[in-house]
Length: 626
Image 1 (spheres, one colour):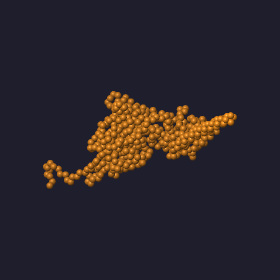
Image 2: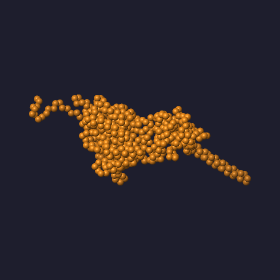
Image 3: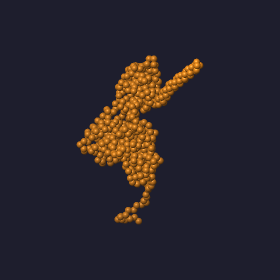
Image 4: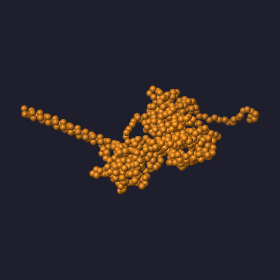
């Protein structure tokens, strides 16, 4: 019988409970105990070698480039070989020719006159013969190869850029630096973390963005202002918590990608490029199961399983999402680079309860590598970074404790241990991501010296670490973490910006620009769309380019010989690095030296035999006389 209205009890008809147990290898970790991974950390090395790049290919030089008369001279024979061109020399009149099916260039040593396809031009400096090798300047390469030349004297790197590489707006790692369109890329800009959230709110109502003045209108106003202030890029989160069943619900996928199309359209319109934070360790990628009468539910797999288990359904969702997202947007001009997840390393090895099991640093590194491989299968042009914050001060030792099956001790890492953690995490990534708040002016990032005392890290140390590992540093979130109410806020912030510039950090995104979300006390430091702080960041962005974007060969880009700057004199896809030629030259040199040495030995043996024979004859004659 049904209870009376006044009965204090409630009848629940046909209750059911759905659960799934999990067994992890350790109480608070998805990582089984075992040996620490062997990590290769390169030895610190400095070189005075001048590097030469043609587009993205490093050319191994048979004869080292040399600096003469405020410019750099390079081995034209080796350049020609690597580009599939021919260099012929006429020693009788000190002339040479560089040819292929598109160009015939004739020049004379020590003369500034050059003929390119039967038209005569004047070079800024003459070709020379140095140590028996025909050497030419960037200006010669500019005119003959229809190339943009960039001589980074401080970085000892000559970059020769041709064809589509001059204008394709792809960010690249060339010689350990970021380049775009044949020029070094430096910028201090902003995070605009909520840009996609605003646009998504047009399709799915949100209390945080309750009307158009906070959604599409605000998003467009922010991008327009950034463009007008001279900024070229932002960092944005492109994942949304609106659809927990995103990977299982086609209708929700359609809404999500329609909003994403709007997002990229708007960024394209205002020529703002995006560090796309993909959020590949988020709940919308977790395995869902359909329960009759209940719909799709999550909870049968966790984020720890997504990271730690490549066979999990959640990891398969990651692959599926990448296939959909990267394939759809990889050719958008507004993509600057791909970022895997926001601050994934902060979750590694810090599990503290049965319901708070964490993945390990080793598992995270393997996850990053796996994601990077999948992204490159879909898009081999854009760079990839992790989205990590600064390392925890005990990052390596946390992993060590977990691998030993012990409780974590938070023992501070040494510099070598820091490098091991960085090398492990970033093995397959192009840039080392840090989120540096108050770096160098607080204890936010430290290592232990030889006596175990804490030492503050700074941007110079971060740059050294990245260079040693063959990576580029990306300062994905940053500010000085100074109290806005303090009287020295602006002077301290200016000094902090200068520390970024002085260290040569190429790309930094300040936290944050024009937060439009409602219901949060974000305040001015989450807005920064006017006032002295905005002016300061605009000035810092201009300064970093004035200081570091310096082409010592700027005057050598005379561009007289070719009407179409995009015309490809040689096939860029067929450029080779020239190692084979260098090895052949080295082998010939060894053979020549061995031949000379062999000749000397034969002569010496011959002389010895002659002397010995003569002495024997002398003795014989004396004996005959007696």
